[in-house]
Image 1 (tube, rainbow, N blue to C red):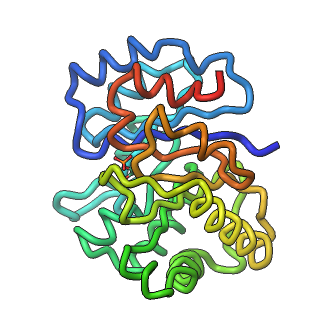
Image 2 (image 1 turned 45 degrees about the horizontal axis):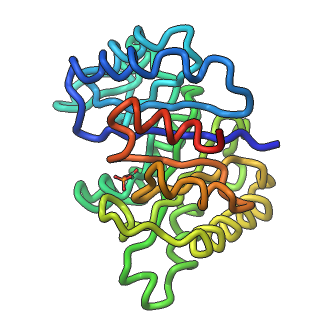
Length: 248
Ligand code: PGA
């Protein structure tokens, strides 16, 4: 059975007080839940606090990004030494906001993917098409390119250490969620690629883009959807708890 992963991407939200409140309210929710994994990605300044507050609670703390170097003269960046010092267990790479707002190239994303794998963190690798790419029928080519340019055929690690998040750009933060049929179709395609090219069809594939407590169940009922990467609806513990416990 594939693990179901509910990942929270807080982006540039939640200050210190809100971070403390979140972990207090989420409490031990994830402690004895089999087959499910809770991942929370706060902004850099609060990573250490989040790591401390989540100790012993079966929650993985993720960084939203990493600069692919250990340390050094890279103004404004955060590299592996600092993330290890904070205690993170996972890193998000390839998020559409990094690709589109910050212009991250395929090459940089590939470097980050390799870097995360070499540092033995869990990789949350995001892919997704824009509305224009979907409407012009380039959908599958775009997704294939995002995967092929990030992973070597040989460079691959434990399936426990890699999660793919399919996040259509037109669904992120817009309130427009992909239908379960649209999402399932793409997840099945991604799973096929992961099986054929990398022999890893069992890796978890998450859906992301306007997931909320009231639409998560329909998505999670799809055969190839193993979890969700959630932005807006993950900021408060009450809402994240409902997402995490969606089938109870
Ligand atoms: P959203 O963001 O849930 O606010 O749409 C998802 C994401 O960007 O990961």
